[in-house]
Length: 538
Image 1: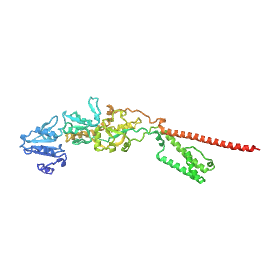
Image 2: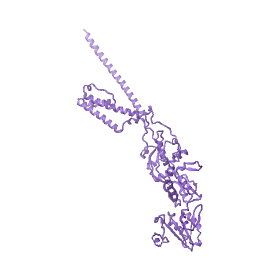
Image 3: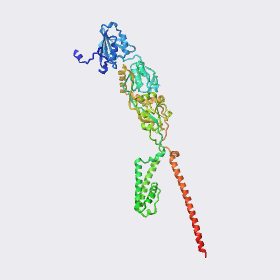
Image 4: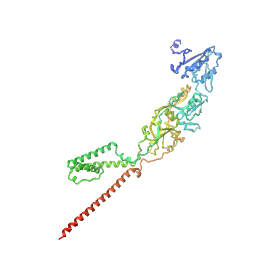
C-alpha cells in the first residue's frame, strides 16, 4: 500500500505557496485533503476556495485535527460548503466520516460503512425532493410557444426548455420560472447571487458554465422577395448569351460575305456601305427584296437564299421561345449577398438583444450591420401581415419552413438570403461551478441517444402552427398567366414611335413627290405651249 502511495502525484500546499490553483495543474479528478487546525482554521477555507477556483467539483476531504474538534460545528461547515458549491466533500472528525446532502435542505449525514461510502456522492443529486429549480427563458422559441397539452401540463416549444423540464422531472425537482429583464442584462447578476439555476439558451457569457451544446444555428437575413422580372427583359430570354454571340457573329459574317461579293462584281465601296447593311437587315427580319441582277447571278442568289433560310430558322426558334416565356412568371435576381443588399435601401429589423450580440462579435459584414435597426418585431403569425418594406433576422429554427414556403408556386413575399452568421453552438447555461453540470450533460446525452432531441426539432413547425405563431395561409398563384398590355410599356412606346415616324415619313414623301410632280407639270406645260405656238405660226 505504501509503495502505491508513493507513485501518486502530490502537491503539498502550505503558507509558502501563494496564488496556486489546482485546475492549472490537475484535472477534475484530483483528490484534495485539507488538514484543519487551530492555527489555520480562520483562513483555511478562503485559501482552499482560492486554490480550487474553477475546480470546486473536485473531491475533497476535510480532516479536523483533534485540537479543533471541540470548536467546530459541522452543520455550519456544511452550509458553507454548499454555499460555495463544494459538493463532493467528506469531513473526518474524531475518527468518524461525515458528508452532507443539499436537498431538500442541507443535512449532515454520517458515513457508517464502505458500502455507503461508494454511493455517498451519487446520492447527493439523485433526488431534489421537490426543490425549486429556477429558470430564465432566454430569447428563443419557448418565449413564443407556450401551451397546455392533453394532460393539462404547461409545455414550452423548442429543445432547450424541453431539455430543462426533462432534467427537472427526472430528478424530482419543481420548475419555477424566474423573470429577467427584456434585454437579459441582469442575468449575470442573477447567476452571481444564485437566484437562478439555468438560462434556457446562450452562446457565451462570462461567469457561467455552459452545458454540452444542444444545437448549432446559422441565422440568415430575410428580405422582401424581388418580384417578377419586367416583361421587357423577356426579349433576351429565348437565347442564352452564347447563342446571342453566335447570332451576332453570323450577322457580321453575312454582312462581310455580301459586301465582298458586291465588291468583286464591281460595286463601288460607297454604294456597298450604303446598301449592304439594309440588305442584311431585310434578310434578318425576313423582308425579302432581291434586286433584278441577283436573278441572273445564281451564286449571289444562293448566298442570299441560304442567309434567308438561316435567319428564318433562328427567328422561328426565337418566337417560339419568346411565346413560351411570356406565359410564365419569372422572378428577378434575388438579394443573396452583402453586395446585393448594399445596392438597395432595405433596413433589417432585429430584436435589440440579438442585434447587440451581432454587433459586439461582428458576426456579419459591417455593410450589413449598418442596415440593422433594433425592434421587437419578429417573423411571426402570418408572413403576409409583416411589413414587406423591411427585412428581418428570423430565428434559425424557421429556416426549413421559410425555404419550403419560398419554393412553393404561390405568392412569394420574402426571400431567405445567403447572408448568414457563422455557425454558433447553443448551450444551456448554469451557475459557475454548478453541481448540475455533470448530471445535466448526462441527461442531454441520453436525450440525444434516444432520439428525443431530433423529434423535438421536427415538432417545432407543428408547435409554431398550433399556437398561431406561424399560419400556413398561402395565396395561390399560377406560374402561367396571360400577357398584359402594360407589361411591355416601353416596347409599345417604341413601336408607336416607329409607326408615327413611318406615317410622317410617308406623308412627307408624298408631299414632296406631289410638289415635284406639280413643278414638272407646270414646267412641261409652259415649254409645250410655246413649242406648239411656234409650230402653227405661218
